[in-house]
Length: 534
Image (cartoon, rainbow, N blue to C red; front, side, top):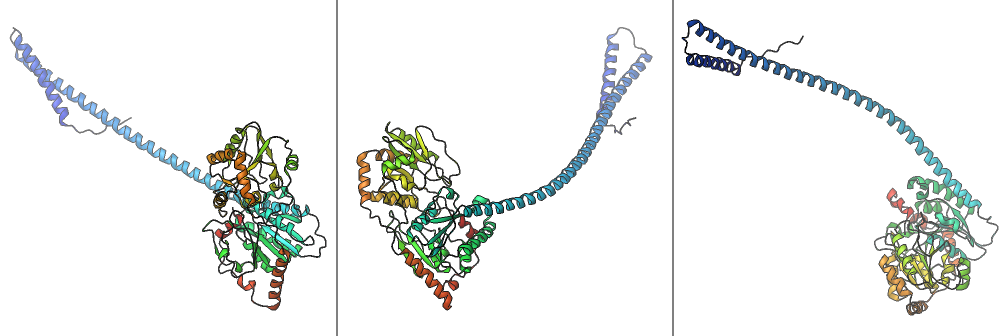
């Protein structure tokens, strides 16, 4: 049974009782005065009692209403407290259960994460070893050769430029020399090795490994290859000599030559370019037809240096008719080659679409031919009358085209100039080291090419080169460029580098072993340059 709460009497209840009694008495008096009959004493007392009873009844009703209101308020407060306490208890229970579940999940996730991480490392290890061994097995045996043994190493980069340059260099060496090339380029399967044997090791990006972990695997594979080949000299082509390469090469006592092409962006100098004698024994510096006056990107004052023309192998370039036949293109139409790079570090879709649509509007006699890069992450969907090809080396087929629309990378620009092919050069602004804009702009100033920085520029340049007189003017300017033959004496220079290194080691004279000691340990930030994007 619910108890009645204590409720003190308050003035409103008393006032209410007195007011009701007074009103009742007033009405009775007025009623008696209005009556013609005389009022007796008993009637007066009865009227007074009736008025007091009415006042008392009103007082009790008002007081009881306040009692019930107070009880309702107290009950609501109690229920609110009980609900709050129950909710708090339930919330605490839920939080405890969630915390327990999360702790269990965290333990499971941690164990699973450790397991997955270990599996990923194992898979990467197996993949790196497998692809490396598969590439080695695909190459013919070295055989017995009387000449020197040379190992070339290329960085990853964003294209096939490093590998193409090394293949061209291999073709310039004597036929009795054994040339091996270790590359990180995923496009190695599309490449004809020619005079060299190709070896492939996946890059850190291809394996999805941190640089430090990838370096350990690459160091193992590189040391194994050095021990197997026993080269007389190692040549590295890239903008940053991997620590693995120069340290392992030094350990084997083999001289290291750094191939450094020009056209670097300003401000990309580093400790290696400032003091290359710390890590290499000699420098091989290929020139740039578009930037003939470009300063050396690396210090040359304390090392043997060989400057050469651009390292190109265009001896296999086909004449127009044979090139068209080799590509499966019919005679008659005028073809325009479009190759804007792999598109792995810059978005080429808008520019590629603009080029194809513009060529399509030149008339029925014109056809666009798009080259799919062998290292592209994805193929861009193309609309319209477009022929897609996959060809390497592209220089072999350049003469099949009226003109070309190409990225302004180092190798491509050297090839179009050497082959006298009118070109629209499209610089990639996203490269880290290679100053493609300056190369393309300088070529345009010399009149040997047109530059197109944007999609609108590409449209204008294609329309301009579609006119025979404009192509003729560019062709005339190209004929004025003195294209140089492959360098003579390259083998003798490499032999001198080897002999000098051998004499220094034999006599104990201070040589590169002392100079190559690093002033500090390279950080992981330095190692990220191993995936250099030129």
